[in-house]
Amino acid sequence: MPKRPLTRRDFIGQASCAAVGSLGLLSTLLNLRMANSAVAQTLPGGEDYRALVCLFFAGGMDSYNLLVPAAATQHAVYTTTRGGIYDAVTNEDGLALPRASLLPLAAAASDPFAFGVHPRAGDHAGTPGIQSLYNAGNLAFLANVGTLVEPTTKAAYSASLAKLPRSLYSHSDQVKQWHTSVATDVRRVGWAGLAADLLHAGNAPDARVSMNISLSGQNLWQTGRSVFNYTISSTGSTLPHDYASPYAAPVVGATSSTALRQAARTAAVESLMQQQHQHLLDQTYAQHTRDSIEGAAAFRDAFEESLVTTLFPGDANYPYPAGLTATTDPARNLSQQLKAVVRTIKMRQQLGLRRQTFFVSYGGWDHHDEVILSMDTMIDVVNRALASYWQALGEIGLQEQVTLYTASDFARTLTSNGAGSDHAWGGNAFVLGGAVQGGRVYGEYPDLALNGPRVVTSRGITLPGLAVEEYFAELALWLGVQRHQLADVLPRIGEFYSPGATPPVGFMRL
Image 1 (tube, rainbow, N blue to C red):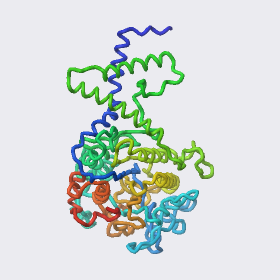
Image 2: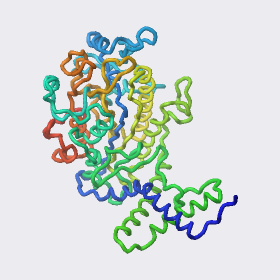
Image 3: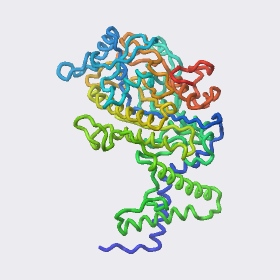
């Protein structure tokens, strides 16, 4: 049956729907202009640049198999608690890694004993991985960090006297608490967003792009009261679907129906932006929409010209491990996101930004089974992605100005559930950057015996010794938040740290 011709009524209806449908697509773009409403200027004069990258391990990483005791006595305790050394034939329920397989970390004077890292955290094709970055002083670990309401002891926990985080073992609740730093209630703003509320005005007055850029969609961490995140993909920014702006590439091989649909949507959006609206809100929205689309186009043009020669997984000539290619390498997605971070940082001056944050999420860590085999693959993904990322930062000369830190919902039980590990509490994280005082394990790595002073259940759940507030306060100070402003960014910091000359933890060069 032939299609009915498009009537004037049909066109108006399609255009109206297109305009409404564009609202969601344009909401992220509007954040570019809304971000400039930040009211505080806290940055010192000059042209210094700093960027903070959050690499979030969604699902809850079994991080006691990332940073592992390597000393004989402590490794024996670890092995016993974890149900013995994993063996696919004789002990497939064991969660411990063999001591001989660990990659040794250089000893520091503050170490209570020797440490090692997962065997897949080494160099790749001559590019330094996690082990070498630590040994070179560019990477530090933080031991047994987690969400807390107040400093807590095992005795208080056991007597039910301790105030505990809301919904302690819930994925969604713990993710929110890691994003906001607040373990007592539900919040709609994240700590990086609140930091941006203070810092964004220190960027260029005509900056079109929010200082908070996400490679993993909308997130709570970068949501402030005035500043929100601007979402891009590993290939840069995108314009509204089927909107043929002067900046949009022509539709290749477009059919008449495609062209007709694009024309209707374009006309609707152009009508919205070009009219002189009677109501101030309508007029402001139209102007912001136009500015935002132009900003997105400018971002895309700059991104296309911002290239690095460092090879990442997913690139054609990358030195792939045996059996992997650009299309089959599981590291390609995370790696290309980190590559986009570097390319965006490289064009910081074109964007008019002196401070930036980036959010990258890598999921799949909820290993209720197959911990050993799954982590073999996933640690390798993280390690090779970070190796290329660090090399690319060196290529653009900004290793000292960019700090990457890791976070996760929670760690996992030290004991096996018969196939894997379950939701737990305190875990290990790491920080990478030229401003990091690396080559050290900060915090107190717990005794992993089931009767240890910070192991609070028979399943092997560790009570955090370091609060996320302390972890984040150090990062916020490095980014440019002033000590007297910490409570504006981390509302409960006073429970764990009193701002003064001594840093919260000590892992950053402040």
